Length: 163
Image (cartoon, rainbow, N blue to C red):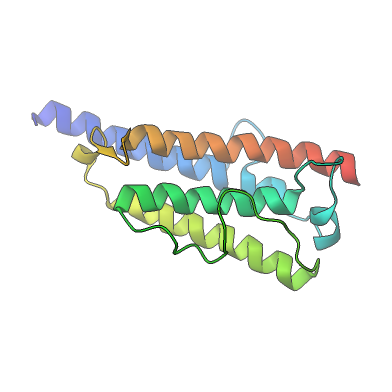
């Protein structure tokens, strides 16, 4: 890799980390981040469905935690089955709508974000063009940031409907 290509890849890695941060919990121009959209919601509010068959804010939060885990696992080659909750993708929540259970699931989301961010930060910039689980690493990282933003919007809309 040439010096110029190395600088470009290093710049891309920094941009990807900034995207992860901006989508999850750092100041953003676009409005609430995922963490910001979830902030201040009580367990009762998080458990309310905006309509029959629709996901509530609680399920959206755990879904986002799961996909952060899935992308991290794909980037590291870790085996499936290490997510703290049984199942995949969507998890019926709440089991019991207590503030403690809601906080535990928000903590799970924060923990999965930190773990994903640490894996991305540790990637050699030259690895971004390579593939993991059949996908370009940089593409997966951009995708998980977009996923957070998409669901931040859903949470924001859900909060308005279920008040």
